Length: 438
View 1 (tube, one colour):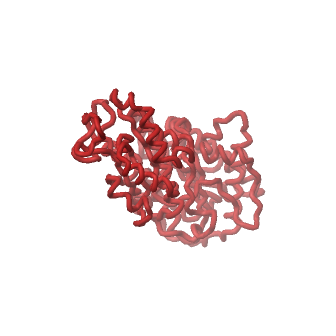
View 2 (view 1 turned 90 degrees about the horizontal axis):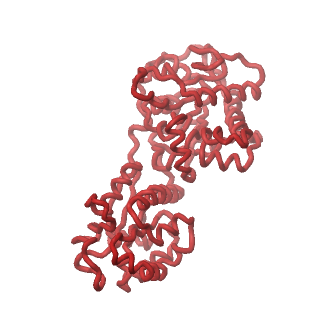
View 3 (view 1 turned 120 degrees about the vertical axis):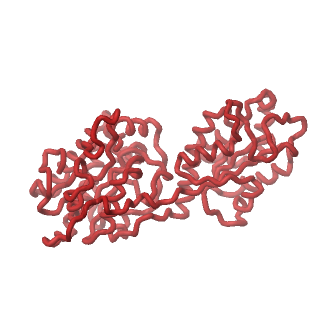
C-alpha cells in the first residue's frame, strides 16, 4: 500500500480494495510524470477508508487492507493488486476519465476473473458529458440483505453536489464526511467477505501498458443545436439587418468583435464539453420537437425573439411549448443593439405568448434563459449548464452505452448503471482542480 501507514509493496493476499485515482499534474512539470506521488487529500481519504475498513471488518492483517495506486501505476505490483483485489474503488473526477492509466486499470478490473465489485466514489463533480462510461455516482450501498450504514440526507445531498472532497471542506459537519466514508467501507468489507480468495497460482502479470484504455474508444455525445431566427430575406418590419445573414444560422446577436455566428460559437462550446454538435434550423428540427421523428440526441434551441413578430412562428412555438421535452433546453439571446433594447418589453410579451409553459415551469436558470440573455458571457455560462441538463434528461430515457464489456460485478444493481446526477457548483469543481482533484 503506497504512501500510507500500512505496508507498501507486493501483497501476499488479496487486498480488500484497490483505490484508483488520477494524480494532479505537478506544477511547472518539475517532477517526473512517470512517478507521481499521491495527492495529500487522496492519501488522507485512503487512510480514512482503510481505518473504517479495519473497524468494520475486525482484526485483519494490514497487508490485506488496500492498495493505493501511486508510484507503480503501470508496473507488475499494480497489475497483481488489480487481479487479486476484492473491490475496485475509482475516485471519480473529470480528470479520471482522461488519465490513460485509470482507463487501463478500469479495463483490467472489469475484464478480469475472478469477479470483484466496482465501487465508484465521487471525489469532485463530473458533468454527464464528461463520463465516457455509464457510472452511478450516488453514494454506494451494500447489497441486500445488509442494512446500509446510516447517512444523513444533508450528507447525501452534499455528496451528490460536491463529492467527498467537497464534504471534507465543510468543517461545520465533519460527521457527514465520516458517514460517507463508512458507507463506502461497508461496501468494501461486504465485497471481501463474499468473494473467495484468488487461487495461489495467479496467472502471469503483465505490464499495464499492454492493457487497452477503457475510456479511449468512447465517442462523444451528440447534441443538436437548433436555430430559430430571421434571415436577410425574412426580417420583421423595420428590423435592421446588422445582426443577420443569408441563413438563420448566420445570426450574430452579440457585438463582441468575434465575428462568428452564434450557432458556430455554440458548437465550439459544445465540443469543449465533450459533445459532437450538429447545427440545424428550426425547420429541420421541428419534426423531432413535435414527436414526428424520434430524437437521437439532446437538443438546445437558440431563439431570436424578433422572429415572433411572425404570427406563424408564434403558433409553431406554442405547439412545441405544449410538449413535455426536458431533453430540449431553450436559450433566448437578446441582441445588444439599441433597437432590441428599446423593444425589450414588447419582445418579452411575445415570448410569453409563444412559450408560456417554459417561462413558468422548471428551474429558475431555465426560465431565465428563456426570458432573455443579455451578453455573450452570460450566454456561454447558461449554455454550458443547460446543455448538460438536457443531456442528463435524455440519458435518463436512453441510457448511455458503456465502452467497456460489462463485468460480472456490473450486473449487480449498485455496481455500474445509468443514473446521471445533477451538475455541481463551479466552486467545488474549481477547488478540486486546484488542490485535490486527481
